[in-house]
Image (tube, rainbow, N blue to C red):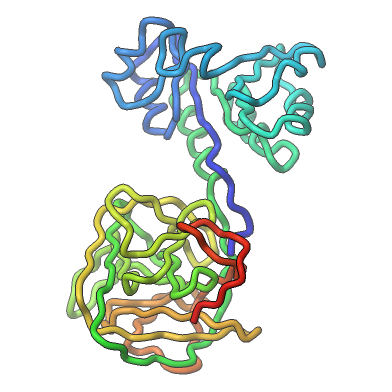
Length: 338
């Protein structure tokens, strides 16, 4: 289903001395932790909920986090990846990081001084460091690095056109209307399906109609039993979603981002079983509410109401492996879902 499914890279920032503008910029940029002077964690916590790294911080040097200054191959040998390890270089160079990536499986945090250096560190040898520690007193540079980290965590989905085969009314059912905490632009929606290996791109409700105002944060996603795609190639049942859960929003180009659930409205409604088929003969289906505000997405990225769909119409879907799922995680198992 995904071309890649990366684990989110760590984003740490040095704030020394502590400055409220820089702390705020780092929190707003999505930093996971701040390296701060001893005795300053409490003042940082007053500005926002974020972990601090110091001898007396939330994460303690030597106990929770290591740091190694690399000046020779002998220094590289000190890094084993058992704990998150900050890599400091005598001058900016990628060769020590390449050497470490080839030998250590994780927990490499590369020290950088700019977004340009961060981009290189996150892409070295197609895997990149497992995170960055930014040393910069520029709020704009902190925000640029935050954007890089956010994009590095995005899954990319391969979408293809499928042709509607049938639309069949089903008995009154419970459906899930997912209200996210984000404004969803035209074209964006959620990946939902009766099977975890085949999902439609269900469009959001950012379109005014004669019967209902636009709800650009909402996706009327389908019946309670359906699978929805999460970050990291995971799935959940729609009925399990609750406030704060993370979902993978997707646009017609297959670009994704993480959005949070604000509310899951489960209500009894008339429903339709929508079934489609790819050129290769793979089927995708979903039980959706029978309403004009419920829309799938055309190959051109336009929303199309399920109430006007007919056999032969093209919409977007994605297909994954036919392996099974155990609590949302993909496993190798012989399974058939109909």
